[in-house]
Image 1 (cartoon, one colour):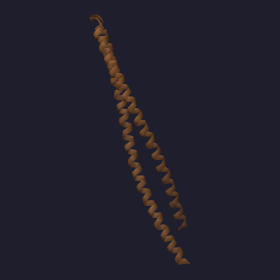
Image 2 (cartoon, helix red, strand yellow):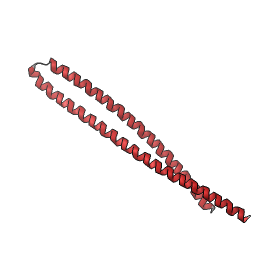
Image 3 (cartoon, one colour):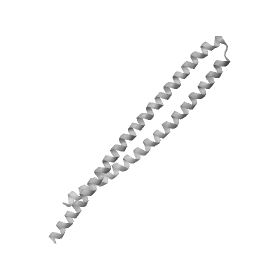
Image 4 (cartoon, helix red, strand yellow):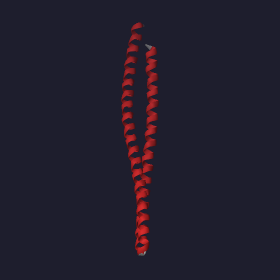
Length: 134
């Protein structure tokens, strides 16, 4: 009975470690989401500035240069759009990973509570057996 109690306590310590590790990972992922959000905002601001610069250049260009400038602008816009989509995808992926970690943490915490209750029951039973033996 004591070995079962020791095994249950060891399992509790391991679960506590797992929960601590998952909380640290969740915090890391939350930081990454925040960082990606800031990157996305920066890219959007850069895109806006580039679009304004492009419009200014288009207005200043003479007709022969407008076509070449327009193609460069289209290329720049396409690159910026791709960068923005990539950042959006990374942000969505990080958000999905965080949601999964939250669910795993909830399940592990429930398991930990169940194990703690089981240990308490075993302690009470052990004390009762010990009292009966005395």
